[in-house]
Length: 151
Image 1 (cartoon, rainbow, N blue to C red):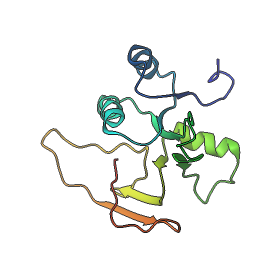
Image 2 (tube, rainbow, N blue to C red):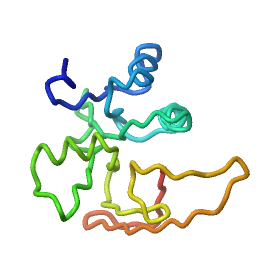
Image 3 (cartoon, rainbow, N blue to C red):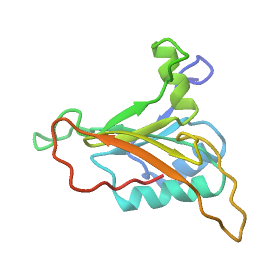
Image 4 (cartoon, one colour):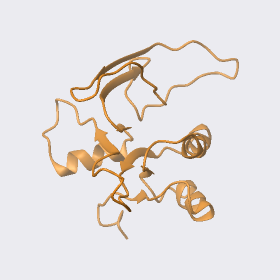
């Protein structure tokens, strides 16, 4: 019903529960998956399985604050709207639908693969090839010594 009314559908607590998520993703009923309480390899591997099978789902962040040890806003979603569009709630939802998002626990990022933003499809033959990646990362509150990017 949410999509029929123009809303954005996000799977919470991804990748659990597994069977419900699989049905929702392959049927195209969702727009994004929530990485809650941080970004972990367990969630990433499941997300990559769907992406590698051609099912696009935006990455979104959610703090999922269930205790006092988790800071509000610890995991955040940024959606690139672009300079050609006015910043509105509708434009933000459209960016999530296009999977033009990134999830972070800290720094801001801008990254491109083959000159294309997140949510783009890049064709690579079964023999593979080299791709060009560019990124900019900035943080005003945390000193940065390394970055880890999952695309």
